[in-house]
Length: 240
Image 1: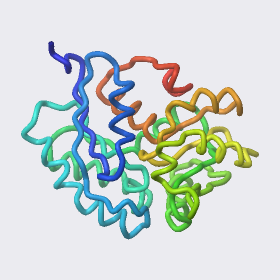
Image 2: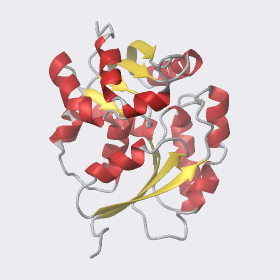
Image 3: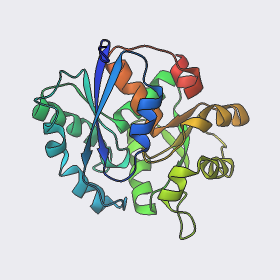
């Protein structure tokens, strides 16, 4: 049986965690195949460590060059694809395309496209990042026309990213604690977060569209590959 009769998607994923791969394989429509390659990452999402990861982008993209034909290669890391400021995601795309010859994409690019598709211009954000990375994410979004009403880090000595990736109910509690005044949407940042199964619940409880990193990465890759399936379980974004 040919598994890629509709599309082939390549994913460049950080070496830490398996959430993005698991989520893609759970929800990718029939006839779409997903191939993943890793990019070295320390797991510490500081600006310096993120830049070190992005330095390896070409090496990770090169594996796709002589493989099966791909419809899109996406860099599946939110903070890594925006750490260099506004336009950095486009530079990452150019590097992918120049290396492997296939259309490129990033999580942060798909995120901006998702905000536009939903018609929202403000968001409340939760992340597992340190404050210095949150500052960069807020600036990236606002430089691209998305007002960040609040951005809150979730990790602490008592709650690590590894724990959050396995405990979506903790993510829900952090969202519940947000001040949503003025927010037209909620964004749960980081492709290492296990958040897809709580999207519909959060949308129902708080009355706002919810975006997560893996959701927008999958949505963006499918749309780039011209696969238009609607997946209501993954929130309002996948119904438009």
